[in-house]
Structures are given as structure tokens and as C-alpha cells.
Length: 223
Image 1 (cartoon, one colour):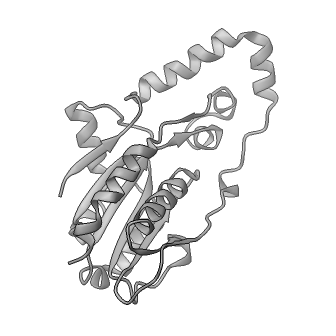
Image 2 (image 1 turned 180 degrees about the vertical axis):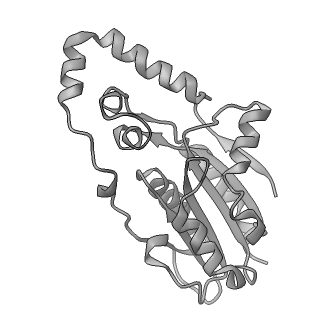
Image 3 (image 1 turned 90 degrees about the vertical axis):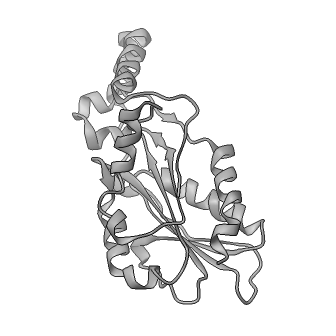
């Protein structure tokens, strides 16, 4: 089991906030006025769709289930499903909030956004509720996050801590941490409203690395 991390450009939370403030200052008062007037998207408006990829055979079904606050994990889960589908698996990608059944799947991938240093509560609860079933199939986990993006020891330890609540419940064949995306929906969850309006959107998801991780899962999912 390895700890991997993908980001286009490592950036700490302090640097991230500094970039947002500097960007705002450079834009000038006129642009700030426009930003302040713009509505902040409602985090609850994020769509959590389901997808299916690949051709179904007798023993090639994989479930990719995910928990997402801002939509970042949705895209990652879909890309993983699409990649595995192209490599001979039949993949269902479903939100954890649908409480998908594990029956009939030969492997399960579980992904969650990280918020306040942990997986989302519904993802933790899904693992707890399905702990016995998850022991019977290969399980891989992935995390989407926007903090602790560096490659220093402290950042790596912080990323590993995202899994503290689920690690005692699982023995994943693989785990990975992907840099996610951040916009005003995320800012409003962490910052005062007037500050959230000034945060520029950023998408640090590295699709090439996400696909490469999914491609390497094949042998691990067929035990």
C-alpha cells in the first residue's frame, strides 16, 4: 500500500490564501466591487450524478463510490471509472449518498473530499456500515483535498491523517491523495462571506496522474 499525491503545483494553505489576497489587490477596487456583488454559489447545489463505463461480463464489476462537497471528487471518480472501463472492467460510479449496495461487485473504490482534516461524514459512515462486506473484496481509496499540498513531511503526515477515521476499518490495496479544486463554494465554508467573494477559483486536479493511478489498479482489483 503506497501513499501517492498528485498536484500540478504544490501550494500550502497559507500561500493559497496569500495568492487570493494578492490577486484581489492587483485587480483594483473596480474589480473588487464586481466580485463583492457576485453571488456565492450554494454548496448544496452541487449535482452528484451516477455513471457506468465498460462492457459487463461475469466477473469484472467494479463500484466507484464517492462523497463530494464541491464537485471536485465527482470529476475524479468519473475519470477513474472511465479509465477502468477502457481496461476491461464494467464500472458503476455512484454517490455515497445513494447508499449503493456492494452485492455483485468484484472490487470497490471509495473516494471522499477532505473537509476540516477528515473524510466527509457520509463517507466514514458508509465504510462503517459496510465494513464486513468490504473485507471480502479488494478496496482502494482516494481523497480529494485542497490543503497540505506540499511534498514535505508535515504535508504528507497531514494527508495521511485524512484517513484516520476509516483506516482502522479498512485494509485498502491502494490509497492516493489528489489535489482538488477550490472556488467560492469552498471559500464560503471556510471564510467570512465577504472574504469568500474575493477568492479566485483554482483547479489543481491532474487528470494525467489520476488516469495513471487508475490504470495501475487493474492487477490489484483482480484477486
